[in-house]
Length: 388
Image: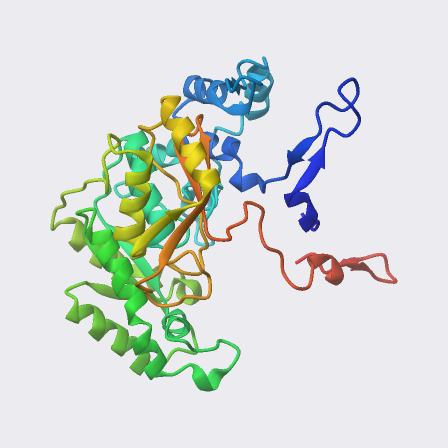
């Protein structure tokens, strides 16, 4: 995890008889792996096996795809995952049951908990709430266009979580400089919230804004955000669940129930009959606000080969930065007039989607400037410190 050089490696240097064929390779973070996506998208063990069998692990010299089934390793993977497919039941600090199951990141995978857990929650409760990782340009889009399509879900309401400080940052404020965290910066940052609202409205589902209030937020800031939402015709609610527990979410819960009562016309953003490029461009133009999509030669080559191999009908799961609606983490707000760059593409055949890699996105995570290891130590009494 702490070796960035493992992202790009050369392996097989021992020769064919010992180490295989020399070639470039690299490591992915676990939550970017296709296995994690498969586990979250599988409906049962039979479906899990079928998906594992379809995983493409390489190519023959004549270009034929080699699958996990070809390598006779699916049975072993099934044994490793036989219990992992079962949802994890935990409880909140107030004793409510919650499923925590599934971990694919939304910037590099589809960003949702498992279909098995969601179906269980829908069966056991009057309302099932699930999180789509990161923002509406990543987790929400992928939930609507990939997860709902595969699982047959039809969401009744979507909730966008915002905070005054996040809006200020999208208005060019510096979180390390309190003097820049102003109402003016927050108003400038509304463009980001507005874009996420318009994105979710494309799916025909009611939208509610949850204002995640921090202790440092002022009444004026919260009132400003609510007034802005009112001007857009979007219901909003102040949420203080972090400090007040369940009672801090009562207003939000009421607003969500009211929105559900308004009805919906849920629809995915694009049809699977479109080409791979058409799907990428639909997301790029409609969700990201790009004015152009550029494909590097490596991406062009893979797209052509995937469509020739019969994978053209799969949805796309774009890998890009979570720090911006664009593919450049430094662009805040709702940037326009920019070019989305697709530099590579690969297929997650078992998960059931195509992964275009955009911008400078890496499939192994960026690490903090100061590694956690620097805080870990053993004191004179033999007690381990710094594992928080």
